Length: 279
Image 1 (cartoon, helix red, strand yellow):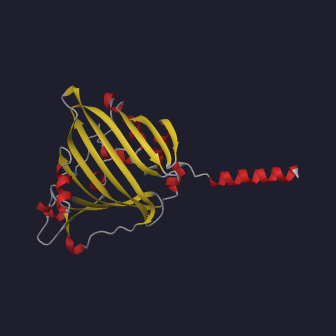
Image 2: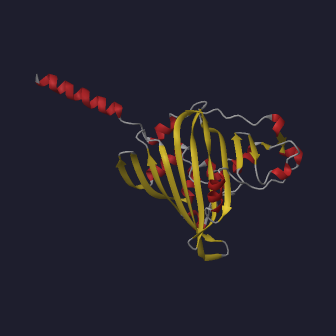
Image 3: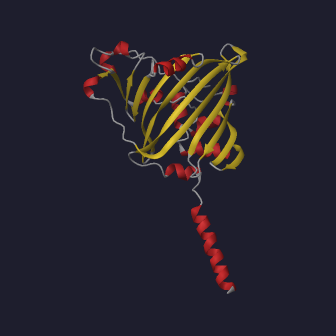
């Protein structure tokens, strides 16, 4: 009888271990596959003297392939200050001044304010071809790209606070801009070169919420940097990103060719998409 009890105990223990979720990095990698993805939404603000001087909203879908992010389709807008455009949109029931960007590995398509000047009559999309043109258009306001396994792993290793919640796990910590630059390909694409001196030592504070499956559901980051020309004054940037619908079917496609103008043929001197300042 005692032996039977022992065997039962071992079996129960094994079942419990089997039910444990994978590590967050493993959970992320298991999401990588063709035509699956999720939805993301960002709100980013730059503060100076306690007042928001720039606000960026962006939301959209992400499509994975076997290696990670394959494509993104986002709609966003930027304004000076905080909230005025959003309040008006709520009153009107429609978005104003939004820019839509669809990105693939070697092509991107842009539509909205700032690009209409370059579009011939009857065209609503501006097409960019070549990886060099895609790097900035693919950038979201969030400085930390948790879709990169090495970047996510770095956050986990720099977490100074870990709490188990009913809804999953909460982690909090900080990582320097120099460390992020080393592990994050997307951040290297956004910067002209490695952050040096004091810029490299800028801490990026983060708060990360994981769901019970150890997939990210929310990431908030904060970093402060001196204003160019006046090292005594700073801007503080705060970005809050939500992740929903992991594993959803997502198949992103380019806009119709008949609606698209080739930026190379149009000769467009394109404005850079609005992103939050880094480094």
